[in-house]
Length: 456
Image (cartoon, rainbow, N blue to C red; front, side, top):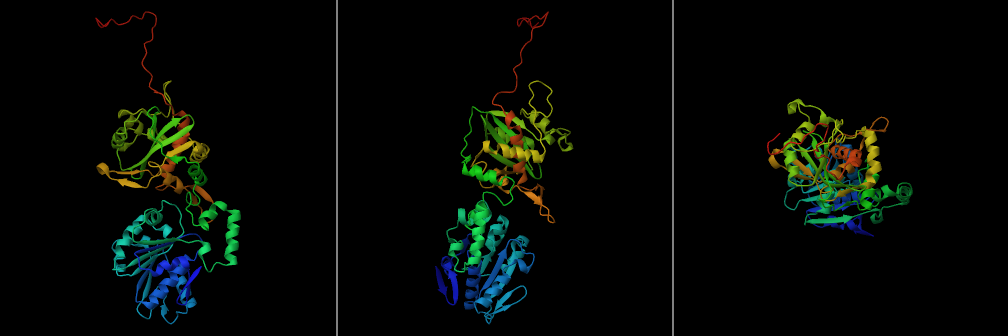
């Protein structure tokens, strides 16, 4: 199970760390030995060769949040105390090797330039690295034969790290999956913790100890519902059915997101065939892009603020503008017999309603569960296919003092979740018939039809 490299013991799978390659990735669950193995390999290589090594993570507010202490402890375990000088914020080898530590989220394109000459960059807890941080870091570590080492416990499949190095890996990569079975230092204490987790949290065990991706972030409001939708195959191909009306459900926004779902109802099924997010987009532009689909349109369903007049729109409401653009909208207060009213619930009532209806919902996997896809047509930004991503990351605020969950977090993921709430609240009123009634003539006493020949 193990291989001896010099005086150090390593998990057999980490032999890759001693093979030259641009990217070296180890992912897996708790107590797999990834971090210990990475630290030992870097210290041995740093003692053998003069290297500049950067140890990075997404957030590092102090040196205590880094792998500085792990490296310090391993120096003593390996008997390399005479080879390294451990400073407060750095580690230096007597041969000129140096270890530096940084948090990537605090770096900019300009500030990271000081790390251009590094030979190795170890990114620990890489599941937390943002796409922006990767975009800044990778071009910076560009010295000839430089390497990027990546260790992490997977979170979501859609996380930037998992997508970049596991789902769509580059060619020059060595990648291994490691779990507790692969750890030569795994002991009875660790095993008791593992078995306790398996008995008390079998769903969490898959991620914590077996390194499998979660269905949603920990604490996600719809965690179990998303997992069940995946298990039941309700995230699937949903072709547009021209015999069914396509209802347009909006969650309004300008600087943040204007979220749009296109929904078809079939018996009890709620089919979300497309999800779009627009940013800084006028309603007439959104209207044109939707009409380009040439669907069999039903009603537009607005939140309550869609009926409020706005000074930015010349005193008109979203309802007024969309009606003028030719859309038929559900109304807030019915004035005519044929009017269909929107339903309104509080956020918490709406969340409960979503949970009740979630088993009826089908999501198109391309247009609702696809990767974030930014497009910049006509000066605005269109983000497509990220509804499932929003639902996986929709969570509540945590009170720091009491650790109690409070109201949902309002962030870039809440717009999709709010949109789903509007869908479920109004789903029972989404019909597959034309709601506009044909004008009929009513006869009354003294009524005389108009003679078309004379016009009266």
